[in-house]
Image 1 (tube, each protein chain N blue to C red):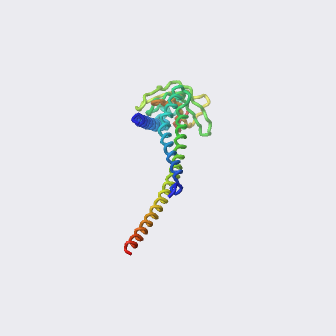
Image 2: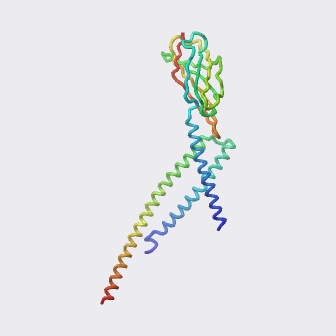
Image 3: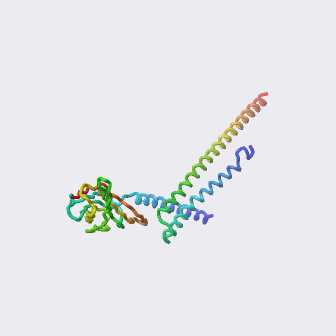
Length: 151
Length: 107
């Protein structure tokens, strides 16, 4: 009788702890999965209007979680809807910046030969592999509408 | 009042079902956690898949439990109403007997 009571009590405790663990892990995962990679983010082209062969970018933002970039590229759209991919880095950005702090970052992309003078709108996209606690997920974040003037 | 009046068979069935719910509630979380842990350690499943499997199981359990609760509550209320009616009838019978006994004594 006593053993049966103890077994039941133990089962209740184990079950309760397991349920609480599942709920906490579920909430943590949803929180992690729905968070953007960068917060308070700002990206701009610092050498506008571009006259040389490089487009220089500067970024300010903070990361919530540990995220390593796997691919970073830009897409430039002209006013007549021509699309050019910018992915040839002439100066690299700082990788794996620490989470929780606003870390400034800069990089330069080569201006493609077929980029005609005029106004372009650039979208910078980053693909990331993020880690938090026991979770890991792939994320992507895009910063749109960066004005690029080519002369 | 016979067994059918209070539907004792159904009451026993509901009690068994409640016991099964109790067992399910106690066993499912630790087994799910253990199973998920093993699958994750051996890299057999991604966490997001596991999350959606868990969410699906939770949803199915919640919906089934909700309807089971509604039917059980309805049955309990119906049984209680019948029992109250029965008790009222007994009360009236006792009153009648008491009054008849009083009449007999007075005569």
